[in-house]
Image (cartoon, rainbow, N blue to C red; front, side, top):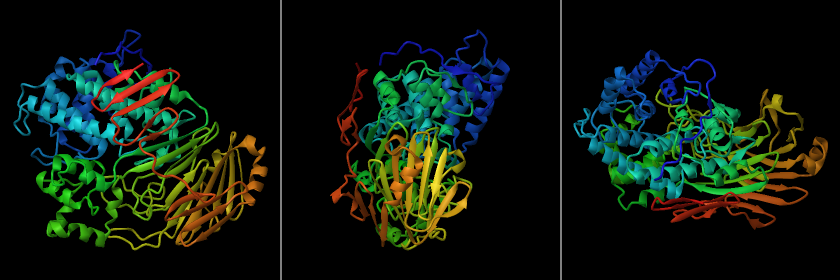
Length: 619
């Protein structure tokens, strides 16, 4: 791939250089002729990164990426060269290697990070013997390359299982931009650039008021409540504007912001900057059954096993046999993240799927299956939701719907849950505002969304006691005005209006939350422009003319303009079914099915064409 000219620096130093990845400051161009990090400080920062890598703790792969960015950027001082080499040559890069560790290798972003680190470290030290498994650097380079090609092809064909995540897209962007910059193989660099294009296209299509906000496969409470604080915000700002971004040395995303080669295609920047009303429909990831059959090798850990584990599908009936095969092949009994799988070794392989159906383990809710996302935005709001995503199943970190108003003010509901895994190895989710104890049935038609939270099903193994009801996050203090009745809420922020109708009486839970009780509860959300109604009072009057009926888990809504029914069969508007499966991309800029051979994005700024063979063309 032809390298782009060196990009202008648009990173602002604000205060002293400090943070987990402060060593990356050595890559800062130093426009004023000074280095932001002196030699002694850089030696200390590199030492800290190496110590963490050597301990093989969770997120050691993040540190390995930072080490490689500094090393390949030519900034490792002579005093640190031996230490950095020793750490990279001694690291454990994949589960198939020997040795105990406490690292998460398998989630989608971690698989990319580990493969990137192994490929680049192996290529850099190709003649060395790597201490952990006594293979040469060249062998590690080739192994990392194989896993990179597999990961990149999956993203091109099916998108991201960690769909639209303002948290985990950061790690992907860092690794991909590092590959574009330093991959010795032009094919890897070209394919990485193409997948980075697709990641940023996701962000551009779902950008509102400067923020990357959408339904998401993995999202935590802080980023849900305060979109401007998301890990992707500096990357989105750097990619889509000409503004400087403030350096944050606790974020691995600084690798992207300090890149010198990858340039965001003009067509993607235009989409990101287009504030006109639109509806974006997009599909992300694979269902477990499709993933298990994709390679025609259900017992192969390196293909089927790696894919299912990237989806965090471990104990689901369709994944459990592949999981146990991989668990044994990779000798994972000592890894604290998955060591509990050892308890299933006594179950005959043929009985495992049935045993999982019977037990209904709560951790099955970690699985990230295919999501069909509809995002409708106007000048004054964005409404995004995953249509009919695993209703009635356990939730984990999936963020299934939200409204965001000007200023990054969100509104969303959840069914409060208890943590699926209550130990120190991972985030304690689901929780009050992260994921769902039980996923709702959600569907949207334009600016109207219906959601039913049905908690009547049988509890599963390890599941916390179910809360009977659901609650709505509303940051009242941040709103311009609002009005409320026993079963409804109307809010205004700027020129955006949101109406919420509830099937049970609304009770104030806290200063920023309302709840409704019941084994089955329903929410109806209507978004609108202030100009349509003139005032919040007139909008409230319109809401009062709406009727909502919940019968079992069937939610029926009549408004002055239309009628809606949400049931097990999906959503219908005025008696017509609303599609909830629309392929990979269905937008005014790009149309593509899943598993397409070519993805072409067009705008007035030009076009971007990506082919399955890795060819990338910008015109």
